[in-house]
Amino acid sequence: MPLSTKKDTDNKGLEPWKISETLFPSYDKPFDKLKFFLNYAILAPSGHNTQPWAFRISTDDNTIHLYADRTRALSVVDPDDRELIISCGSALFNLQLAISYFGYRFETSMLPLRPKGEDTVDNSHDLLATVRIIDIHKKPEKTKDEEIKRVFNSITLRRTNRFRFDEGKEISQEVLSNLQSIAHKYDSVWLHIEKNKEEKERIAKLITEGDIIQMSNKKLRRELASWVHANRNHLRDGMPGYAFGFGDILSLVGPFVIRTFDFGKGQAAKDKELATGSPILIVIGTNSDNTHSWINTGLAMSNILLYLKSENIWSSYLNQPIEVPHLRKRLATLIRGHSDKNPQLLLRIGYSDIEVLPTPRRSIEQTMLGEE
Ligand SMILES: Cc1cc2nc3c(=O)[nH]c(=O)nc-3n(C[C@H](O)[C@H](O)[C@H](O)COP(=O)(O)O)c2cc1C
Image (cartoon, rainbow, N blue to C red; front, side, top):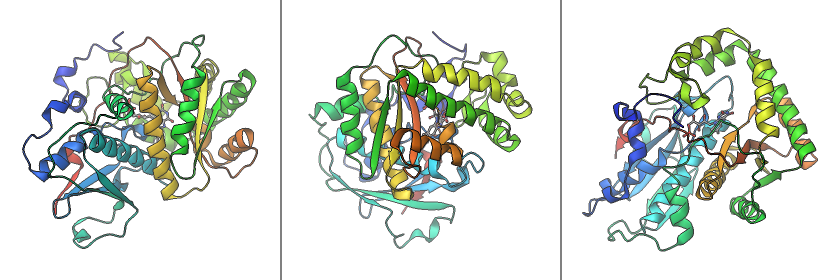
Protein backbone atom coordinates (compact mmCIF):
# COMPACT_ATOMS: atom_id res chain seq x y z
CA MET A 1 0.00 0.00 0.00
CA PRO A 2 1.79 3.19 -1.06
CA LEU A 3 1.64 5.84 1.66
CA SER A 4 2.58 8.72 -0.57
CA THR A 5 1.98 9.69 -4.14
CA LYS A 6 5.65 10.56 -4.39
CA LYS A 7 7.36 8.95 -7.35
CA ASP A 8 10.71 7.65 -6.30
CA THR A 9 12.09 8.12 -9.81
CA ASP A 10 12.45 11.87 -9.23
CA ASN A 11 14.17 11.53 -5.90
CA LYS A 12 17.93 11.07 -6.06
CA GLY A 13 17.98 10.22 -2.34
CA LEU A 14 16.19 6.93 -3.05
CA GLU A 15 18.61 5.82 -5.78
CA PRO A 16 21.12 4.24 -3.35
CA TRP A 17 18.49 1.56 -2.62
CA LYS A 18 18.67 0.42 -6.25
CA ILE A 19 22.26 -0.71 -5.96
CA SER A 20 22.83 -3.90 -7.90
CA GLU A 21 25.55 -6.45 -7.26
CA THR A 22 26.05 -6.66 -11.02
CA LEU A 23 27.74 -3.25 -10.76
CA PHE A 24 30.66 -4.66 -8.76
CA PRO A 25 33.84 -3.66 -10.67
CA SER A 26 34.93 -6.55 -12.86
CA TYR A 27 38.39 -4.98 -13.34
CA ASP A 28 41.15 -4.89 -10.75
CA LYS A 29 41.11 -1.33 -9.46
CA PRO A 30 41.28 -1.45 -5.64
CA PHE A 31 39.83 2.03 -5.10
CA ASP A 32 36.70 1.22 -7.11
CA LYS A 33 36.22 -2.09 -5.33
CA LEU A 34 36.62 -0.52 -1.89
CA LYS A 35 34.25 2.30 -2.82
CA PHE A 36 31.66 -0.17 -4.11
CA PHE A 37 31.35 -1.80 -0.68
CA LEU A 38 30.24 1.57 0.74
CA ASN A 39 27.02 1.29 -1.30
CA TYR A 40 25.80 -1.19 1.30
CA ALA A 41 27.20 0.56 4.39
CA ILE A 42 25.15 3.71 3.74
CA LEU A 43 21.85 1.78 3.69
CA ALA A 44 22.17 1.16 7.43
CA PRO A 45 19.58 2.71 9.76
CA SER A 46 20.53 5.72 11.91
CA GLY A 47 18.86 7.90 14.54
CA HIS A 48 16.55 10.40 12.73
CA ASN A 49 18.28 9.21 9.52
CA THR A 50 21.18 11.54 10.28
CA GLN A 51 23.63 9.10 8.62
CA PRO A 52 26.39 10.16 11.03
CA TRP A 53 29.16 8.26 9.30
CA ALA A 54 32.07 9.20 7.07
CA PHE A 55 34.54 7.04 5.21
CA ARG A 56 38.06 7.41 3.92
CA ILE A 57 39.61 4.97 1.49
CA SER A 58 43.33 4.30 1.61
CA THR A 59 44.68 2.34 -1.35
CA ASP A 60 48.15 2.19 0.28
CA ASP A 61 46.94 -0.61 2.51
CA ASN A 62 43.49 -1.31 0.95
CA THR A 63 41.71 -0.04 4.01
CA ILE A 64 38.36 1.65 4.61
CA HIS A 65 38.37 4.02 7.58
CA LEU A 66 35.02 4.53 9.32
CA TYR A 67 34.52 7.78 11.24
CA ALA A 68 31.76 9.04 13.49
CA ASP A 69 30.67 12.37 11.98
CA ARG A 70 29.83 14.35 15.10
CA THR A 71 28.62 17.33 13.07
CA ARG A 72 25.49 15.17 12.57
CA ALA A 73 24.91 14.66 16.31
CA LEU A 74 21.48 14.92 17.93
CA SER A 75 22.58 16.87 20.98
CA VAL A 76 19.18 16.89 22.72
CA VAL A 77 17.86 13.35 22.32
CA ASP A 78 21.33 11.73 22.25
CA PRO A 79 23.66 14.00 24.27
CA ASP A 80 26.44 11.38 24.66
CA ASP A 81 26.38 10.40 20.96
CA ARG A 82 25.49 6.88 22.10
CA GLU A 83 22.93 6.29 19.35
CA LEU A 84 25.23 8.05 16.89
CA ILE A 85 27.93 5.45 17.54
CA ILE A 86 25.37 2.62 17.41
CA SER A 87 24.32 3.90 13.97
CA CYS A 88 27.96 3.83 12.81
CA GLY A 89 28.28 0.27 14.18
CA SER A 90 25.32 -0.65 12.03
CA ALA A 91 27.01 0.78 8.93
CA LEU A 92 30.15 -1.17 9.86
CA PHE A 93 28.12 -4.40 9.94
CA ASN A 94 26.73 -3.77 6.45
CA LEU A 95 30.21 -2.93 5.17
CA GLN A 96 31.74 -6.14 6.53
CA LEU A 97 28.79 -8.17 5.26
CA ALA A 98 29.17 -6.78 1.73
CA ILE A 99 32.90 -7.55 1.70
CA SER A 100 32.19 -11.15 2.78
CA TYR A 101 29.36 -11.51 0.27
CA PHE A 102 31.64 -10.62 -2.66
CA GLY A 103 34.12 -13.20 -1.41
CA TYR A 104 36.89 -11.04 0.06
CA ARG A 105 38.63 -11.48 3.40
CA PHE A 106 39.12 -8.58 5.80
CA GLU A 107 40.43 -7.67 9.22
CA THR A 108 38.83 -4.99 11.37
CA SER A 109 40.57 -2.85 13.99
CA MET A 110 38.17 -1.25 16.42
CA LEU A 111 39.01 2.19 17.78
CA PRO A 112 42.55 2.24 16.34
CA LEU A 113 44.87 5.14 16.97
CA ARG A 114 44.77 7.72 14.21
CA PRO A 115 47.40 6.82 11.62
CA LYS A 116 49.72 9.32 9.96
CA GLY A 117 48.06 11.49 7.33
CA GLU A 118 45.00 11.92 9.53
CA ASP A 119 45.65 15.65 9.93
CA THR A 120 43.47 16.14 6.85
CA VAL A 121 40.50 14.94 8.89
CA ASP A 122 38.98 17.56 11.15
CA ASN A 123 38.33 17.12 14.86
CA SER A 124 34.62 16.50 14.54
CA HIS A 125 35.36 13.13 12.92
CA ASP A 126 36.44 10.30 15.23
CA LEU A 127 37.99 7.18 13.81
CA LEU A 128 35.88 4.21 14.98
CA ALA A 129 37.25 1.35 12.92
CA THR A 130 39.46 0.41 10.01
CA VAL A 131 38.61 -2.48 7.73
CA ARG A 132 41.53 -3.81 5.69
CA ILE A 133 40.77 -6.05 2.74
CA ILE A 134 43.43 -8.74 2.72
CA ASP A 135 43.00 -10.07 -0.83
CA ILE A 136 41.73 -7.09 -2.84
CA HIS A 137 43.42 -8.19 -6.10
CA LYS A 138 41.52 -11.48 -6.11
CA LYS A 139 38.79 -11.93 -8.71
CA PRO A 140 35.38 -11.45 -7.14
CA GLU A 141 33.79 -14.78 -6.35
CA LYS A 142 30.59 -14.50 -4.37
CA THR A 143 30.27 -16.38 -1.11
CA LYS A 144 28.67 -19.81 -1.02
CA ASP A 145 27.68 -19.30 2.62
CA GLU A 146 23.84 -19.39 2.66
CA GLU A 147 23.60 -17.41 5.90
CA ILE A 148 25.73 -14.56 4.54
CA LYS A 149 23.71 -14.57 1.30
CA ARG A 150 20.30 -14.30 2.91
CA VAL A 151 21.33 -11.58 5.37
CA PHE A 152 23.11 -9.63 2.61
CA ASN A 153 20.03 -9.85 0.37
CA SER A 154 18.01 -8.14 3.11
CA ILE A 155 20.14 -4.97 3.11
CA THR A 156 18.14 -3.29 0.33
CA LEU A 157 14.79 -4.56 1.70
CA ARG A 158 15.12 -3.54 5.35
CA ARG A 159 13.10 -0.55 6.56
CA THR A 160 11.92 0.83 9.87
CA ASN A 161 8.21 -0.01 9.85
CA ARG A 162 6.30 2.30 12.23
CA PHE A 163 2.90 0.77 11.49
CA ARG A 164 0.94 -1.84 13.43
CA PHE A 165 2.13 -5.41 13.28
CA ASP A 166 -0.12 -8.44 13.06
CA GLU A 167 -0.82 -9.19 16.73
CA GLY A 168 -2.08 -12.69 16.17
CA LYS A 169 0.81 -13.97 14.06
CA GLU A 170 3.42 -15.40 16.40
CA ILE A 171 7.14 -15.48 15.78
CA SER A 172 8.51 -19.02 15.96
CA GLN A 173 10.72 -20.26 18.78
CA GLU A 174 13.34 -21.14 16.18
CA VAL A 175 13.59 -17.51 15.02
CA LEU A 176 13.81 -16.31 18.64
CA SER A 177 16.62 -18.80 19.40
CA ASN A 178 18.46 -17.62 16.30
CA LEU A 179 18.19 -14.03 17.55
CA GLN A 180 19.85 -15.07 20.83
CA SER A 181 22.64 -16.84 18.92
CA ILE A 182 23.23 -13.72 16.80
CA ALA A 183 23.42 -11.43 19.87
CA HIS A 184 25.89 -13.78 21.58
CA LYS A 185 28.35 -13.38 18.71
CA TYR A 186 29.08 -9.82 19.83
CA ASP A 187 31.28 -9.05 22.81
CA SER A 188 29.39 -7.64 25.81
CA VAL A 189 25.98 -7.76 24.04
CA TRP A 190 22.87 -9.32 25.60
CA LEU A 191 19.36 -9.68 24.21
CA HIS A 192 16.10 -9.69 26.14
CA ILE A 193 13.05 -11.13 24.35
CA GLU A 194 9.62 -10.32 25.78
CA LYS A 195 6.40 -11.96 24.68
CA ASN A 196 4.55 -12.08 28.00
CA LYS A 197 1.50 -9.78 27.92
CA GLU A 198 1.90 -8.35 31.45
CA GLU A 199 5.63 -7.74 30.99
CA LYS A 200 5.00 -6.02 27.65
CA GLU A 201 2.50 -3.78 29.44
CA ARG A 202 5.11 -2.87 32.07
CA ILE A 203 7.61 -1.97 29.36
CA ALA A 204 4.89 -0.03 27.49
CA LYS A 205 4.29 2.03 30.64
CA LEU A 206 7.93 3.15 30.58
CA ILE A 207 7.59 3.98 26.88
CA THR A 208 4.57 6.19 27.58
CA GLU A 209 6.38 7.93 30.45
CA GLY A 210 9.27 8.54 28.04
CA ASP A 211 6.90 10.04 25.45
CA ILE A 212 5.40 12.46 27.98
CA ILE A 213 8.83 13.58 29.24
CA GLN A 214 10.39 13.90 25.79
CA MET A 215 7.53 15.67 24.06
CA SER A 216 7.23 18.26 26.84
CA ASN A 217 10.80 19.27 25.97
CA LYS A 218 10.66 22.08 23.39
CA LYS A 219 14.30 21.65 22.41
CA LEU A 220 13.79 17.95 21.71
CA ARG A 221 10.73 18.69 19.58
CA ARG A 222 12.63 21.38 17.68
CA GLU A 223 15.48 18.96 17.01
CA LEU A 224 13.07 16.23 15.87
CA ALA A 225 11.14 18.68 13.65
CA SER A 226 14.35 19.72 11.91
CA TRP A 227 14.85 16.12 10.72
CA VAL A 228 11.24 15.47 9.60
CA HIS A 229 10.62 16.59 6.02
CA ALA A 230 7.74 17.01 3.61
CA ASN A 231 7.25 13.98 1.37
CA ARG A 232 8.16 15.89 -1.78
CA ASN A 233 11.19 17.53 -0.24
CA HIS A 234 14.16 15.81 -1.85
CA LEU A 235 16.65 16.19 0.97
CA ARG A 236 18.98 13.22 1.21
CA ASP A 237 18.84 12.75 4.97
CA GLY A 238 16.20 13.01 7.69
CA MET A 239 12.78 11.37 7.77
CA PRO A 240 10.11 12.06 5.12
CA GLY A 241 6.61 12.35 6.58
CA TYR A 242 5.55 9.14 4.82
CA ALA A 243 7.79 7.17 7.21
CA PHE A 244 5.22 8.14 9.90
CA GLY A 245 2.20 7.54 7.66
CA PHE A 246 1.72 11.23 6.76
CA GLY A 247 0.16 11.87 3.35
CA ASP A 248 1.69 14.61 1.18
CA ILE A 249 -0.40 17.47 2.63
CA LEU A 250 -0.03 16.44 6.26
CA SER A 251 3.70 16.02 5.71
CA LEU A 252 3.93 19.72 4.77
CA VAL A 253 2.72 20.83 8.20
CA GLY A 254 4.29 17.93 10.15
CA PRO A 255 7.49 19.73 11.18
CA PHE A 256 5.49 22.81 12.30
CA VAL A 257 3.13 20.67 14.40
CA ILE A 258 6.00 18.75 16.00
CA ARG A 259 7.84 21.97 16.84
CA THR A 260 4.82 23.81 18.20
CA PHE A 261 2.63 21.41 20.17
CA ASP A 262 3.30 19.10 23.10
CA PHE A 263 1.68 15.97 21.70
CA GLY A 264 3.13 13.66 24.37
CA LYS A 265 -0.21 12.26 25.53
CA GLY A 266 -1.33 11.36 22.02
CA GLN A 267 2.05 9.83 21.20
CA ALA A 268 1.98 7.86 24.45
CA ALA A 269 -1.45 6.37 23.66
CA LYS A 270 -0.31 5.41 20.17
CA ASP A 271 2.99 3.90 21.33
CA LYS A 272 1.26 1.93 24.09
CA GLU A 273 -0.93 0.31 21.49
CA LEU A 274 2.00 -0.38 19.17
CA ALA A 275 4.09 -1.89 21.96
CA THR A 276 1.43 -4.10 23.54
CA GLY A 277 -0.01 -4.98 20.12
CA SER A 278 3.29 -6.32 18.77
CA PRO A 279 3.93 -10.03 19.28
CA ILE A 280 7.44 -9.46 20.66
CA LEU A 281 9.46 -6.64 22.19
CA ILE A 282 13.23 -7.01 22.23
CA VAL A 283 15.87 -5.09 24.13
CA ILE A 284 19.48 -5.13 22.98
CA GLY A 285 21.85 -4.25 25.82
CA THR A 286 25.49 -4.48 26.81
CA ASN A 287 27.45 -5.32 29.96
CA SER A 288 29.53 -2.16 29.67
CA ASP A 289 28.49 1.27 28.41
CA ASN A 290 31.24 2.83 26.31
CA THR A 291 32.15 3.51 22.67
CA HIS A 292 33.24 -0.08 22.15
CA SER A 293 29.97 -1.55 23.45
CA TRP A 294 27.96 0.97 21.40
CA ILE A 295 29.75 -0.13 18.21
CA ASN A 296 29.03 -3.74 19.14
CA THR A 297 25.39 -2.85 19.74
CA GLY A 298 25.24 -1.44 16.20
CA LEU A 299 26.84 -4.59 14.76
CA ALA A 300 24.40 -6.83 16.62
CA MET A 301 21.41 -4.62 15.76
CA SER A 302 22.09 -4.69 12.02
CA ASN A 303 22.68 -8.43 12.08
CA ILE A 304 19.40 -8.95 13.97
CA LEU A 305 17.33 -6.60 11.78
CA LEU A 306 18.65 -8.08 8.54
CA TYR A 307 18.14 -11.64 9.77
CA LEU A 308 14.57 -10.72 10.78
CA LYS A 309 13.90 -9.20 7.35
CA SER A 310 15.14 -12.41 5.73
CA GLU A 311 12.36 -14.11 7.73
CA ASN A 312 9.89 -11.47 6.49
CA ILE A 313 9.65 -9.93 9.97
CA TRP A 314 9.55 -6.13 10.36
CA SER A 315 11.05 -4.09 13.14
CA SER A 316 10.62 -0.64 14.65
CA TYR A 317 12.14 1.32 17.52
CA LEU A 318 10.61 2.47 20.81
CA ASN A 319 13.74 3.84 22.44
CA GLN A 320 12.12 6.55 24.56
CA PRO A 321 12.72 4.87 27.95
CA ILE A 322 16.39 4.32 27.08
CA GLU A 323 16.86 7.94 26.05
CA VAL A 324 15.64 9.25 29.44
CA PRO A 325 18.33 8.33 32.05
CA HIS A 326 16.09 7.47 35.03
CA LEU A 327 13.73 5.43 32.84
CA ARG A 328 16.72 3.57 31.40
CA LYS A 329 17.59 2.42 34.93
CA ARG A 330 13.99 1.36 35.57
CA LEU A 331 13.89 -0.60 32.31
CA ALA A 332 17.17 -2.34 33.23
CA THR A 333 15.78 -3.27 36.65
CA LEU A 334 12.53 -4.50 35.13
CA ILE A 335 14.07 -6.84 32.58
CA ARG A 336 17.50 -7.70 34.09
CA GLY A 337 16.92 -7.20 37.82
CA HIS A 338 19.58 -4.50 38.17
CA SER A 339 19.67 -0.81 37.30
CA ASP A 340 23.17 -0.75 35.74
CA LYS A 341 22.59 -3.33 32.99
CA ASN A 342 22.75 -0.81 30.10
CA PRO A 343 19.81 -1.37 27.75
CA GLN A 344 20.78 0.21 24.41
CA LEU A 345 17.82 -0.28 22.06
CA LEU A 346 14.16 -1.24 22.47
CA LEU A 347 12.43 -2.64 19.41
CA ARG A 348 9.12 -4.21 18.53
CA ILE A 349 9.08 -6.90 15.89
CA GLY A 350 6.34 -8.66 13.97
CA TYR A 351 4.66 -9.46 10.68
CA SER A 352 2.78 -6.91 8.57
CA ASP A 353 1.36 -6.66 5.06
CA ILE A 354 2.00 -2.91 4.89
CA GLU A 355 4.81 -2.14 2.49
CA VAL A 356 7.05 0.68 3.64
CA LEU A 357 8.89 3.03 1.31
CA PRO A 358 12.63 3.48 1.80
CA THR A 359 14.00 6.71 3.28
CA PRO A 360 16.63 8.76 1.42
CA ARG A 361 20.37 8.38 1.70
CA ARG A 362 23.23 10.72 0.86
CA SER A 363 25.45 9.67 -2.02
CA ILE A 364 28.65 7.81 -1.25
CA GLU A 365 30.62 10.84 -2.42
CA GLN A 366 28.87 12.95 0.24
CA THR A 367 30.07 10.57 2.95
CA MET A 368 33.68 10.31 1.78
CA LEU A 369 36.56 12.27 3.25
CA GLY A 370 38.76 11.78 0.20
CA GLU A 371 41.46 9.35 -0.84
CA GLU A 372 44.76 9.17 0.97
C1 LIG B 1 20.33 4.02 17.04
C2 LIG B 1 18.99 4.25 16.40
C3 LIG B 1 17.95 4.78 17.14
C4 LIG B 1 16.69 4.98 16.56
N1 LIG B 1 15.66 5.45 17.34
C5 LIG B 1 14.43 5.55 16.81
C6 LIG B 1 13.30 5.90 17.64
O1 LIG B 1 13.43 6.08 18.86
N2 LIG B 1 12.08 6.00 17.05
C7 LIG B 1 11.90 5.76 15.72
O2 LIG B 1 10.76 5.84 15.25
N3 LIG B 1 12.94 5.39 14.92
C8 LIG B 1 14.18 5.28 15.44
N4 LIG B 1 15.23 4.87 14.65
C9 LIG B 1 14.99 4.57 13.23
C10 LIG B 1 15.50 5.68 12.31
O3 LIG B 1 14.69 6.82 12.38
C11 LIG B 1 15.58 5.12 10.89
O4 LIG B 1 16.57 4.12 10.86
C12 LIG B 1 15.93 6.18 9.86
O5 LIG B 1 14.91 7.13 9.77
C13 LIG B 1 16.18 5.57 8.48
O6 LIG B 1 15.07 4.83 8.05
P1 LIG B 1 15.16 3.28 7.69
O7 LIG B 1 15.51 2.54 8.95
O8 LIG B 1 13.78 2.92 7.20
O9 LIG B 1 16.22 3.08 6.66
C14 LIG B 1 16.48 4.66 15.20
C15 LIG B 1 17.54 4.12 14.46
C16 LIG B 1 18.77 3.90 15.05
C17 LIG B 1 19.88 3.27 14.25
